Each structure stands twice: as C-alpha cells, then as structure tokens.
Length: 591
Image (tube, rainbow, N blue to C red; front, side, top):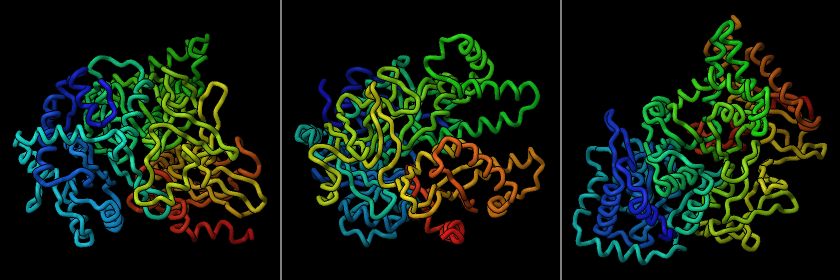
C-alpha cells in the first residue's frame, strides 16, 4: 500500500506486521502490551471522541508528557485521523513559554501527562483564550481524564465520519507544529506536512539493517522532538515492538528487562554510558584493570578495514570475548544497533562501541528537514566521523561559504505565521541548514560546525567552537564545555567539570576533596588536572584555535536551569550571561 499520510503507517503494520506487543508501557510494575489491532481500535475510538468534543479539521491539540507511553501515540494518530494537528511541547519549559506557544498555535485542547504539567497550564489558562479543555493521562482529582475521550468514542456510529475525515486529509496538509527550542529568542513553529514526515520515514527505513523477526526497541527520548517522533513511525512501519522506558533514571534497568535489538540515543547519553563504564574499569586492579584498558585501547583503534586484518582481528576477538561482551550484556545482551542523532558524536566513542559489536548509526537532520538528511549505515556507506550519505529523497549541496543546503519532499512547509523568517532560510527550493559541512568523493556528508556559532578572534582568525568542544568532551573530567573568544585576542572556555567523576578520581588519588561543586571548581589540583586534559586535546588544533585559558563553573548545566535546550544543545548567550563574572575574569587583563 502507498504511504503518504501518517496514519497510513498503522494500517500498513496491521496488514503486514501485526504484533501482540506493538506498544508496551510499564504500569505498576507490569509491562502492559497493546496489540496492533487493539491500538488501531483505540486510535479510532480516540478520533470518534474528538469529533464528539467538536474538534474540527485544522484545530490544534497540544501533547505534553514527561514520559513516553502508549497513550501518547494513540493520541497522536487519533488527532491526525480527524484532520486536526498536534502540537507536541517539551514538559520542562517555563509557564511563560507554554503561554506563548499555546497562544501562537491557538491550541484548543491540551493533553498532559501529570499534575505538575497540569498545574503549570492551569496557572496560565486565563492567558490563552483559545484553550477550552485540559485532559490528563494520569488520574488527577477534579481534572478531566484522557480515558473520557476514549469513552466518548465508544459510539461506533461516528466511524463513517472518521473515514471521511481521513480521506479528506491531503498528504501536503499540515500534520504537526513543532516548536524548536532555539538557543535564542522565541521558539519558531515548524510546519510539517504528512508528506514531509512520511517521505522521511520510508526513505530512512532503508538505512536500518536487517534485524530478527519480532525485533524490540525501547523508547525514552522525548517524542515531542522530531527525532524520536519519526523513529516511532519507522518502528511501526518496520513492525518493531515499541517498549516505553519508565523514566530516564530507570533506563538501565528497563533495557535489561526488554533486551532491545535497537534504540535511539543522543551523544550525551552515550558519553555518560561510556564514562560510567570507564569509571568501573578504574575501580579494578592488577591484571583485570590492565586487560580492561587494553581492550578499550584496542576499541579506540577500530576501523572497518582493520577488522579482518591480522593481528588486529585477533586482538579484537579477545577484547570482545573478555571485555566487550559484558558491555553488551549491560544493554540487554541482544542490542545490535543504536541510532544516534541530535548532535555530533565523538568518533572515538563510535569506534569503541562498534568494536564492542554495539553498532552506532549516526544520522543528521533538523526539525525543518523532518528529522533526517543523512544516515550512516552498512546498507549504504558507513564511515566513522561522518553522518553518512544523504537519504534517497534528499539533494544536498554545499554553498560557497560551506553551508549545507538541502531540498526534498521532507523540507518543512515553513515557520507558522512567519513568512519573513521562512524566506530567510530558503534560496529557491533549497533550505539553508545553518550547518557547515563537506561531501567527500563517496558522497558522504561530514558536519564541521554551526555557521552561526563560528567566530573571529581579534586577529581575524576563524574558530569553529563545536570542533574544539567535541574534542574536549572526550575527557571524563569535562561534562560540558563552551568555547569563547569572539573578538578577543585568544580562545578560552567555560567548563562544567564532571563532578561525580572528579570525586571518584580524587578518592583514588587520595586527594582531600569535599563533594561540593564550589570547592571542586576552585580546587587547584582539579584545575591542574583539567589543564592537562585541555593541553592533550589542544595538540590537534592550530595555534590560533587552541584553548589558552579556562574557568570552571561551580554548578551543573541543565535544561531545567536554562543552560541547555531540551535537545542538550548549549544556550550560548544564556551560559555567557550566567557566568559573565568568569568570562570577564578570563579577559580582564588581556585587553
């Protein structure tokens, strides 16, 4: 069957890959399975319930959830079937941002996951004239429950109307409004059509290598982000069972229970997993410790062409059997692929994981490109340190200034209610990504930096901060780093130390250090050790790029505190403002 509307994916699975465990959510300690047929029935009930609530085509319904769950996906499909559009929103944004998005999108109904989000919305409801109803997934006294919509939809006489609505949806109609978190200014509403997203899913699916029948995945990245959203449609299309993690805190335990074959992750999460593994290795002693770090070093030297070359292949077999097999076991034992996106992945990390037979498929895309432009894969060209060749629906070219330009059926319809900003990012059919990159002789794309984030020193030299930051974050001592120096004589950095790792390091080296972020950031031995790390990675950069000075911040950078976007990107202006005293201290005697 032809797929060009998002709810077509559900019919496709029902016809080709029906499962007993299409969607699985853990409730009160039990994994609750929903079959493909049951899911389809509930989606239809939800659509009928919305019609009873007088939801019309092009009405906007917000979905705001702290965790992924079957109810979210039922709501998504049910909304789309009646010709309405959903507006997925990050749960951790401020009440002020909620008010802005709900007003800008003219949201009619909001569906929230719990009391915390409900209270936030309740506090600004009077500021949003369009908002008529709030429903909750969880039981909250005095609040309308999500099940009420399903119960309204028990009336099957409305199914004919649902089918008419589905038929009336055009593939080029708006499907969803996704507000980009942005690092500056108000969020922009990216308009994505059914065709934008469905074309990406069917094309990107070709990059997923063969997996066992009845393959399982675990979902924990927020579905309000386009990356996880399109992956859900892809899983439905491929017939994978989607198991929802209870929370990010319980992800390790849930992975061991589910034993997934594939899942998605962002680089920061993979870095944390790796750092924990290394910290465990540091606790070993004698021959076990030596063997552990010998295996890690063997993994860091991995490349595809070396796997079958003696003596490297012998060392790799030994490392896999004795050390890496335990890493794989910690991820459920059956993991074959992790799809990484949202930010650049350290090549060293990719080498080690692939050496451990945990293959990482790194992709690249933006919300404006419906999540995907290119993907590394053994089904195409797989090169470590790149984001692979573009998927077959995209045409990519590099502008004279190095910017990546993309055109294809997946490129957004535009920014909602903002023709001016839309015009700024297009030249003809080509969308300006804002990223700098290059395409090699094999047609493989490599990202080098964000165009807007590159800066000039006072000496007129260009610096690409992301390259430096990604290199420095290979150090287990560095949790976050922001390179600065625009208009200055030299390049410097603001650094959030990895407080947990540093405490473990201090204990091993008998350094008297209290578990206090302020003390850690100001301790001379910590500063000295981090300088060693910076000097080590500085060797790979030109004289004008090297980080000459740095300051450690005495607090963790987080989404909640405003340092990071919900996709873990640096809010550079915010960070610089929050730590202005440290920035000024770096440059005060240099001007």
